[in-house]
Length: 118
Image (cartoon, rainbow, N blue to C red; front, side, top):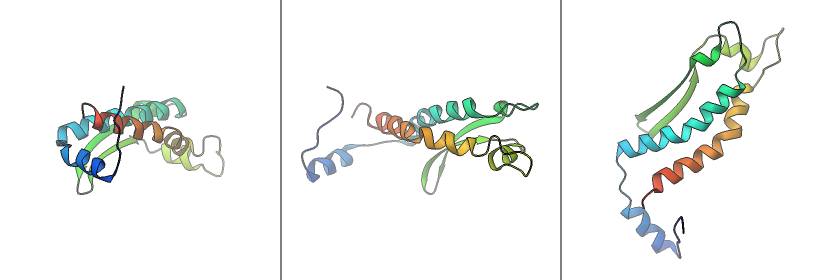
């Protein structure tokens, strides 16, 4: 059987206290979790003459808050595609829709990766 069973608060506390995660494992889990998000953003990114898909980058870093995973499009024109202009409204919200569609899948992958082997 995959997974684990928790009967009460004591079992949950014991499980969490036994978990020892190092930064490398956390970063690896985050990298796996943001991959489906990146793929969805790539799929929905409009194609322009400069092809913004080439400018989609992922990064995983540690900050004061913890491990942060980011999917960015490093292209000036993405602002006009995401928020629109007075002349162009065709792709408004493509990035936000991509994130909203896949963030639950990313969280699920993150949980599975962090609990792997526990």
